[in-house]
Length: 118
Image (spheres, rainbow, N blue to C red):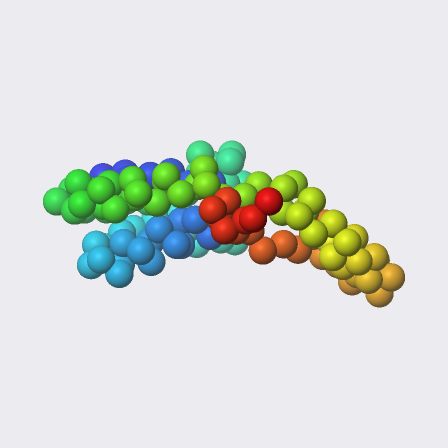
């Protein structure tokens, strides 16, 4: 029997979680993955991406997820990453605007706060 393990609102997060579980030999299933992949803008409306595991693997899977959740709070925020190198971000935005290329407002490499020296 399959039991829900976690609900995610990001395709990347769901795929990383599935890959991590597979690396530890735990089979996981995302019932609506192909639907969400094709209509990603409906992730919130559909209640997120549910990740299911077999009942006998649920406890081990939850034990693997707990340490990963602790690292999320240690990630550098996007505004802080932008302010760390404002000239590079402004230059990239100007160059992309000048060439007419489509891009997000910033392209940054997020770091753990322990890696950032203030």
